[in-house]
Each structure stands twice: as structure tokens, then as C-alpha cells.
Length: 415
Image 1 (cartoon, one colour):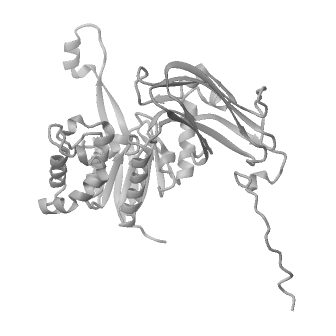
Image 2 (tube, helix red, strand yellow):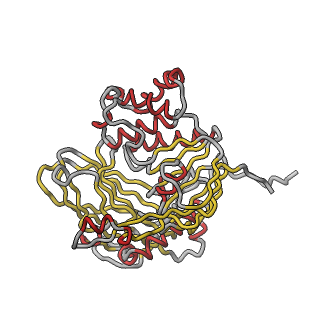
């Protein structure tokens, strides 16, 4: 049996916090009183072993304890009890802005962060050009970082940390900011770090973004590690938690979603007075004029989208078809023209029969600028199953791709 060298060993780790009870009378006195404090465990009896050279995704709902675990490993906050063994030098990106001095420029913060991680001034200078290039905003390198956007903060932090040459890297929601170009650069850089033998832990709310690069994933829920395994198995376990804790599964499994349901799936990074997009109807059916729960892959499939919007510039509507593990199967782009007043549009899309085999699919609808920055998204819409009478359909893969026989030979055993 192969024995792997351990980068991190965690035994019986607990982290307890205290929160104050709300009271309408004598509020200041209650805040000062220890008797008014309620305790809760952000992490409970955590036992983990991380092998050197692994990429580990840490997933779970909000408040699960994911970020708390990384803060303890980075020694930002101490554990309440338990034992942690760390073999190697750690570099981390936790909350946006941690480690930066807001009144200093990006250039000055590069040197400050480098010195805090033990690099000499000469070592930092040798990496300076590479850091600024990865940062991508050379014109702002002498600007105080307090004027940076969240994306610029994260870019600079990532550019610095990945040049530290640590043994273990901790990333908290590194893919939650920035455009698609930056996210692609992050994934490439993480794979490069792994090739050097580094160990990488990534906390994320979007496991499908790191699905293909992780060796395994850890699912944390309410302070407990409830599943550790392959990315595929862990993501499925995560989906089961989401479905059991929210009343959206039945809505999601419907082939018709109306305005009230769609509001629950909307996430936006822009202010609605500047630009907005509202999906008010979504359906998938085998007829452009009828709706049904059964969907057949040997018949034409129609997708209907009704939405209203206003935007000071052109943008793209992106429809992503994905499997239940979050793997993208196909992506369709639709260019939408600017409109300063609110207008309503209806789009009907056709997927020709026998394009897919029998499978389960979901949809993402994303709104992006023309330079591919995601502005608004509707994630994991409309979980539905394509059915077929073909008994071999489940063995035939996702998509029907014609493969032509271009050469036929005689029996190879002929003498």
C-alpha cells in the first residue's frame, strides 16, 4: 500500500464562537453581560488528512465553516481545541483586502506582502515584473489600493501569493471575482503550482469551476465534514443538501418556470438602476406551443425565454447546458442590443431531435458584457430528464455525433 506524505493533518478540531442575544431593554448592559451570550460551533470535531501535492476543493452552503477552517490553517484565528500539523510554508488569500494596507499603493503592498512572507527585497524585485504582469493593471500599480475594485484586490493578491513559492496555498473564493479571462488564468496558475508539488486548498461556492482540477473535494455542512471523496461524488452530496434545505427542488424539476420562481435563482453584480435583466419565463418542451413534464430526446426540443431588460450597452445572453455534476455540455451565445428603457423580448430556441441521448440536464443563463464579464446569472435552472425508448441510450454518451466509416478492409486473417 502506497504511503502518501502528509501536508496537513487535523485531529479533533473545534472552533467555538459566541453571539449576543438580542434584547429591547437595556441593550448596552446585555452586550456587556456574558450571561447573555450564546455559543455555537463553527467547526465540530474535524478530522482530515491532506496529502502533499493534492488540489482539494472545500464546498458547502453559506455558514458551513469553510472559511473558518482556512483562517485556522492560516493562523488568522486560533482553534478552540484540537491539533493541527502543517508540514511546509503556507501562503493564503482569505477575505478581500486582508494583508493589504489601504493607503499604500499596489507597488508598495507588493513589497510589504513579500517581506511578511519572508522574501528579501532583492527576491521581491526579481519577481516584480511577473507580479505586475499577472495583476493586469500596470497603470494602477502606483494607486492606493483603497481605490481598487474587489476584482483588482483579488488579482493583486493572487499575483503576489502565487510568486511566494510556498508549499501549501489556501484560496478562499478566488474565482468569485474577476472576468472569465482572470478565472482561466487562476485555473492555469493553480495547475502550474500543483506541477511544482504544491498542495492547494480552494474554498468555493461554485464547485463546477474547479471540478476538473481537484483530486478530491470536502463537503462541510453546519460545521461538520459530512463527505470526502471524488469531485463527482462530493458535488452530488452537496446537491442533496441544497435540495433538502430549500423548497426549490420541485420548482427546479418543473419544465416551466415563472417569474416568482425565477427570482430565487437570480444573482446580480450590477445596480439595477444602471442596467438590469429579468427572466420572467423559461420553459423546455417538445412543442413550441405546448408544455409537458415528459421530454423526449427523439423529438425536437424547444426552449422558450421571455425577459425584460434595460442596458446602456450591448450585451450577451449565454445559455449553458450542463449535466447534474455541473459539467458544461454546450453553450449558446445570443447578442442583445442596448436599450435605455425597459423592453420585453421573447426568444424560442430549437434543439433538433436526436441531438442528445437519454440524460438529465440543467441550464445556466448568464448575462455578460461584450468583454465577457459576467453581470447577472441564473444558475442551475430547470433540472429535467430527456427520455427515450432506446434501451442502449444511457450507454451512448450525452450527444449524438455522426461517425462515418470511410474505409472497410477484408478479413485480416486471410492468408
